[in-house]
Length: 152
Length: 152
Image (tube, rainbow over all chains, first blue to last red):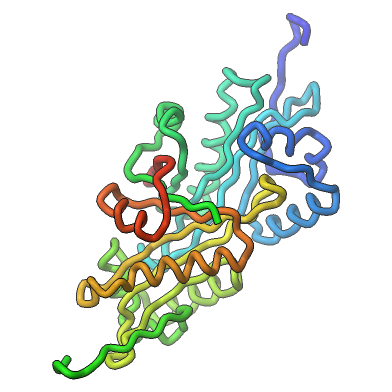
């Protein structure tokens, strides 16, 4: 972009039209995304949105280019413990390499945490590599446990 | 129990009648459970079961006493990445102190992992304290990341 131009970013929920705005290409910067057909994308979009506020995907769009610059998601878990408490699970936070250094990742995490607050969650959590610990500490999270996983 | 008697355990999904079988008291061995009314329990039970196979709570019942001896849950997350992959999030695994040392925890984790496999998940994950790392390694999981959290 030219020097004098100001970038404008818009933070919002994922829209079904975001497939054409580089959303899947952005996810592929995080891990294997694969190549989805429009039908596969639309079906998964509908499955996720059928959960309403219990599964939210946030995106930040660069308004001038119409490109998705950052994303992250959160699932709300309904528990019995903590007096039928709810916990938010943040997943798949990624900022496009082109747009790094603009605090978009922090905006995504804050958007997702605010959603958890509004949903009445007592806790929000996420898993990350040790190298991203500092970033999430800046977002107000602390390291209290380890993640164990298994590929099936 | 008397010396010659053999304990029989039954592993299955949580049933709405399990509130009377010590299910909430068992959760309170993990963290604050609170005291739920029957109506609160039933409502949360219905909310969770409305997700069908996407949110499963497993229990092990000691048949002779009719008491819930162990539990754990799993939520299936639907993603776009990994070709619209699914990931299983295991939560709230606990074995009653009275029934420890009988491998019930491992049975719960294996039941939940088998559910994830049947649901087509590419991965299963959970967060735990460092002191429980060895137990989950015996269940086949490995430590690959850290957990960050924030109480809201």
